[in-house]
Length: 250
Ligand code: HEM
Image (cartoon, rainbow, N blue to C red; front, top):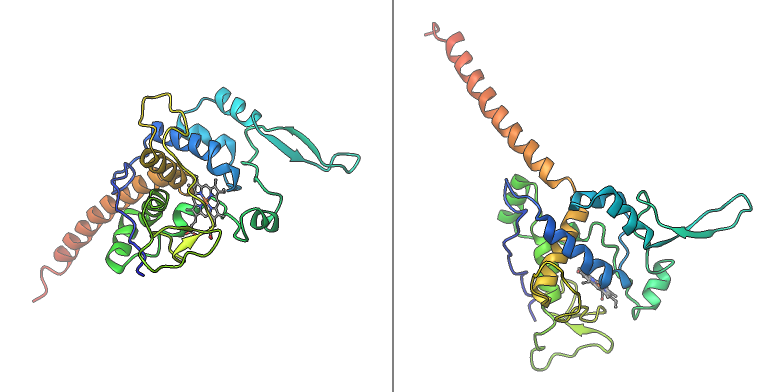
């Protein structure tokens, strides 16, 4: 049974001049917080970086304070709970990998900090070249979106689905996975009027995870473009100089 290729989406951050859509990232954060964070950690992302999404310092402080962080040891040598502050990272839903696996039928939900890049490299050669050129791995968010919207499909006749797993033709490591369909329509409330559908949630959370994995994508694209402009001008100059220097040589 072939694994389906991820559907290619039209992301705002694709291409050499792509940028993140902050409203979309804010919606994606909401989906992460209200749905994915129940099982997936995102350990490398600090609350303070959420200012990139357009939140003020005060909003980030308030957001961090919603979380309880286990800190310590204090002077007495004990661990203690305190409200989160902007320099904290998103806390993990499980104390360790074993507990995470035990709660999920033996498969630990992967950390989400770099998930959008994790599956982005498994693409064919031409796409790989394209990705280097635009400094953007497109497979990742396409894959996450396809995976999240791929639970509706029926398994082909005759396929055996192991107990405790869900069929998903986009899952790259088998016919089914131990993540049950996490999204349903109207599950997360959006206050900007965007459609509350599985497709929209999946797009938004994929874009958000791309940002989490590549927060400096816009700067890197800008730098890449400047480098290309510089190299073309410099190349032209070197060529003209060469012509001048060698002009008199027969
Ligand atoms: C795996 C995304 C919510 C449990 C994964 C993978 C992705 C993903 C991209 C990796 C698939 C791969 O290895 O190629 C998401 C997103 C979520 C979400 C975006 C929120 C919208 C959840 C929830 C649970 C969960 C709520 C727990 C009930 C798991 C487990 C795996 C997994 C157990 C490992 C599956 C396996 O290897 O069989 N998730 N997930 N996820 N997720 Fe989620």
